[in-house]
Length: 130
Image (cartoon, rainbow, N blue to C red):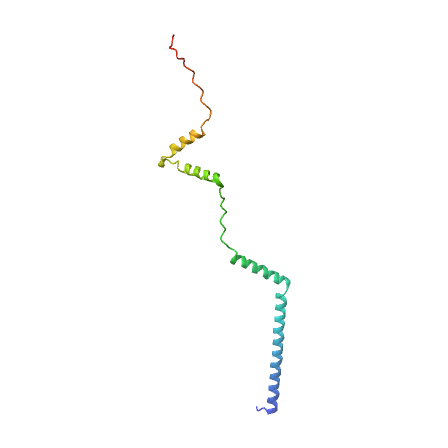
């Protein structure tokens, strides 16, 4: 089966035409996908969803910080000093230091009743029975 040059040229022309048609169809398909993807990504719903996902990922990855220490209240002047001294004295009121007894006695003397003791009945200087 021998083909003439004319038949071979015709067959090559048909194959080249099919290749060209398939290439044009492929380019159209690629352009259609690209345009569809661009429209989908640029839609407001998609942009809002992507923003939310980005925010959530940012919070998860970078949102965990060490908690800040609580602010320390500063004691003012003499009241602060007295509070510190009282705290130290109470802390020393442990039996192993032997200071507790003295501190309790001093606190009892200071915070005890301030009322003067009733005067004892006066004794007469005269001998009894005279």
